[in-house]
Length: 251
Image (cartoon, rainbow, N blue to C red; front, side):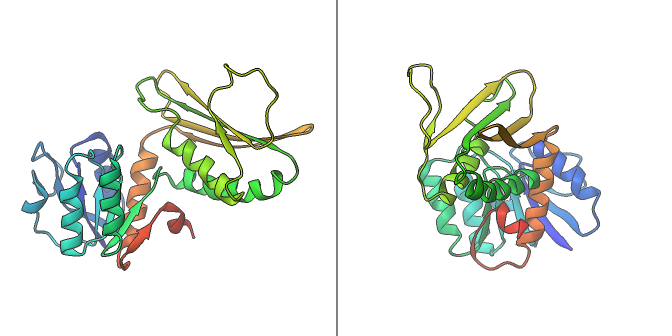
């Protein structure tokens, strides 16, 4: 049984995680932390991390970047593995998270979806073969019209995984409208589409002579990210200090 402390339990993602955990027999939420306090969740909810005294095997943090220092310190002090899902971390906050990985197990990923992380693994393998055969590589991502950043963190993670596999030889190109020239072989194009309520679509296109190979992932609900965080918490149960990501979960 994996016992979880859920930070941000009253938010949209927190409620989804609570629902998912309620459907599984080998995991339970023993406490929640949320600035808005109590909710009908079936477990005690505290306004601050320091008020939580329950024993747990993992912390899932799906709250905002504000106050992440307190959550990191709590995980380190109590030696509870941390699944960190907060976005928009500053450089200083990211450094603090990396430093915590030297003292306790920390898992952070650009995307918590199991499917997306399998996609990252697959495109790395494809790049090794197809790039050598002269295929051009393009990434197209689509999200809802309320998303603030572009390209998405997942699109960049896909690009980085390919570029690392190819010894950093590619240059990212986000906009070709200002340049009239043929595509360079070492370009890696990244395009962003924003509209409607698209949860998250990612296509990695390998375009060769007379054939195209496309790897795609479609998220139809944010539930896939909630599910991934629960899988990650189970994975971290009993793990020693270190930095992990969802790729480790899939090994």
